[in-house]
Length: 323
Ligand code: UDP
Image 1 (cartoon, rainbow, N blue to C red):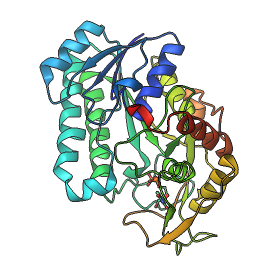
Image 2: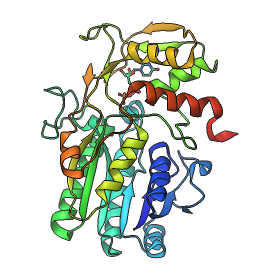
Image 3: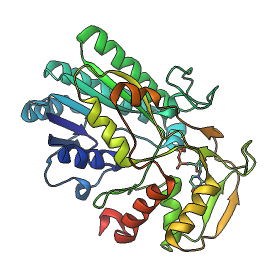
């Protein structure tokens, strides 16, 4: 298929582009490089530098790529920033996303795949988390993603635009070529690996008094290649709806740090810090629906292989894409 990938220069987008190409699709990347990196775009893809705020540029990209499907990653994704600048999140994640949807309908695009998040659930009532849990986001980032999920439902109902929305748990890991490089890094695994590379003096553990066995937060880490694979399966006609993507295994912050020590062979100094606002104690996916309806099967579910792939990439690219 001809697939237009917005945010294809970002972490998840770039690896999805690589995997789409490996699967034989024609890929066009639309990215304004505000967060992404030109070097993260696979050279086999056509790159268009453009912004989702510009409808003419989007229409042109859809026309030129003859896009049959759009995979939409481009969005702001820093929870903390969304609490201080909510307008930025609603304007881009909902407003500009809607411009993209309007252009998709006008351009005859048949399928829309959206990267949503488990942050749409807020503090979950049940564990593991199924798709039918109440969605009560606790920050504007999660709210903006939930709002766009609703917009998608209306566009499907009224314009017949078939969509799949994936609620990601904790995407991690790398491929041989592409990995995680955020201008502001807030995520646990890359931050711990920076300590192993001696780019940071210590691992900060945010909160050790949570109601979990070792007092630190539990998350469901999923390999980026498995995540990308789900997007490829979602392109098949007739696949639609909301899907959690996670492995169903929970690891605490301390367990992740221990795994990073094992994989890197380095002792990593740890400092216990207060809780980070807005962190639910435990987020673990039930992703049975994706397995059942999409035929998705994670190939790299173990935390060790996830961390090892990330370490390999960070070791080879200590400065990320800025070298
Ligand atoms: N975390 C931490 N130290 C860090 C970064 C994250 O202790 O340097 C914790 C964070 O508080 C959360 C977990 O690690 O409990 C996962 O955080 P991350 O930002 O990677 O993902 P999130 O689950 O927030 O999307």
